[in-house]
Amino acid sequence: MEIDQLKKWRRELHSFPELGWTEFVTTSVLVRELKSMGYEPLLGESIINREFVRGRKIDLVQKAIKVAIDKGVDKELLNKMNELTGCVAIFDSGLPGPTVALRFDIDCVGVQETDNENHLPLINGFKSNTPNQMHACGHDGHMAIGLGIAKWLKQQPVNSLCGRVKLLFQPAEEGVRGAKPMEMSGIVDDCNYYLASHIGFIAKSGEIVVNPNSFLCTTKYDFRFKGLSSHPGKDPHVGINALAGCCNAATQLLAIPRHGKGMSRINVGVIRAGEARNVIPAYGELQVEVRGETEEINTFMCQQAERLVKGVALGFGLDLEIEVMGEAVDLTNDQEMVQLLSDVSKPYNLTIIESRPFGGSEDATILARRVQKINNGKAIYFVLGSDLKGTHHQSDFDFDESILPIGVNIYTNCLLKLISKK
Image (cartoon, rainbow, N blue to C red):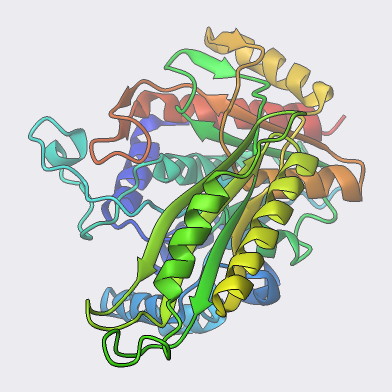
């Protein structure tokens, strides 16, 4: 795959980053390119089950749609999306064979991109033009690789491939929100194989981690406490202080005992409460995440956290609303796929790293687990190494664009092994 085209796609997508569930312009660019190759991408509720959408603020969605219209995105396309982002392109060989799903995330991070004069996107004119939004995790590169694979598939000789390939361009990976509703649409239920990957992260240029481990299950919560406001001098007995409940809950949550069977984590990342110093706060919110090395451990942490905040609400006389905002599961790669990836990586002079801890959470695991369970399918998540400027989610993040064609070639060589006509 020619690097110039991959860089062109990456740089266009980098210049207009969009947060999870607001990727309307991004989706329109993907649809434009896929249609030019001969695909008819699936959109909206055909790929996203609205019932399972989490962490989506309708005011931000509507604002993003207006921005998309102002940028010239076709209104008919927006109508087909029906306020839901992402798309799926399907390559059908017309011949019987397995179905392979490849997943690429499309959202950005809420970070202000640096104005440092040495920053490559600034030098080359593709720095983010949206304040406080940036592709600071490599998803622009993931999308470029996905488009490169889509183009390669259409260039293959007739009858050289069998089966089907589904290219999943998934919204809202940040906050692990987008995979669950995509899973529950049923889009991967007929898939026999599943591949996904990440640029950089735990590997540098010239390396590929074929079997990363220690994917952490996670659940993201919003805990909302509702009390009663009053004057703290005249009527302190009337008020019910939601801020006090939040603070009490936060300290107790951080003191939850850790699990003895493996890694467990909890973090209280945000507290919001209060209007003025002379008003007893009627509303308070905690944004919390738990993680666990296994589903059992993560479930334990969830149960402990929910039990605790319910007790705090009862003790302070507060109403409580619990909302799950995102989730991911653990993943064990299938050894058949690990061996396949190792084999196809050898011609590229990559250092093949058998295993390395991932140490975080990724909702690509939800789709992988679905494929493994529904059809006894085979799944793998791997890491394509890249030298980085800055680190992931930092304002000066950038990756080595020379790895883009390698990424395309790794995937396409896997496809040749999986769906070449025998």
